[in-house]
Length: 436
Image (cartoon, rainbow, N blue to C red; front, side, top):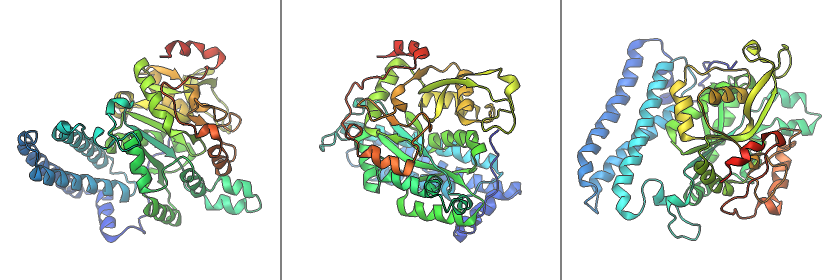
């Protein structure tokens, strides 16, 4: 089962951040109440002012008062973002849940408010920044929606690197910082300007997704990396392979609270992604009504303790797993994430493995599955979106193979719209009837 969040070291945090963490981690109901009350009052003040001025927004080309309110709202949003980024994982679950909810409300209001104020200028919150790559405005309707790509990465286990000092290949495989850098060097935006360009041209936001470690040195290294690149989303969980299902649940919650996209892509850091082709695919998924997309599989339920994929709840499952997507790369629609995960955060059954946990969540809520083999292509076909080797369930040597794939001409070819499909597995051909 997924591991529960644990208390984490905060030695590298600045004094103000440590004080906030100490308050959040305190058992005192009074201190918790003060933290929540201050956030609520802050939000309420700006919310009220914005509502009072909203009537004058649409008819006025000059909106200095409205802009000041938006600045204030963004300030609240930034403070909440800092709270999420700096605080360590704690058992103050009630406070965290409330703050996440408040932030989600704030982001929803910002989207509606900006759309209302900028609608006469040809774009709302999303459409305003989109171009076609040649400087011309690009309509939101031309895209399949806003996409968030979360790249699941980990924290380098220094002990494993020492144990494998005579095996360079193993050292590379378990050095997660180098894996992230190989992704930045290939398909992931390398700079802040690249991130902005991707958001404008493709409507895609990308972040590495990492939890925490009880090792202060590892925490320091991740903080320095994020200070340099600003592309890591930290989750309030402790990293562990056994806790991947819990990390996945926390990931979807954090993304919906902080970004509220139309589609969420979960991808491991040993997969090569071709982001340019995602928008063409999302339009197809939307037309067919798919909400859970990936390369699907069945499989034996592992009943023997000590095996890698042992499932302690095997008695509830029988001999074979239900159909579910490989965990290395899959996609969910906003509606599915909200209906299935966000509304049931405390009631989701957690199996031993991430992919089967997600699969049982989907199956229990009547979600429309779609097998899309473009997400698990063996090579850089012109219709491929994700590249991995089946024998390795990813790229066999990620830090090397990322560069090899990136140099392949077919991986760099411009996306076509509509994007061609790839045939399903032989016993899954019924999914091909969903093609649009």
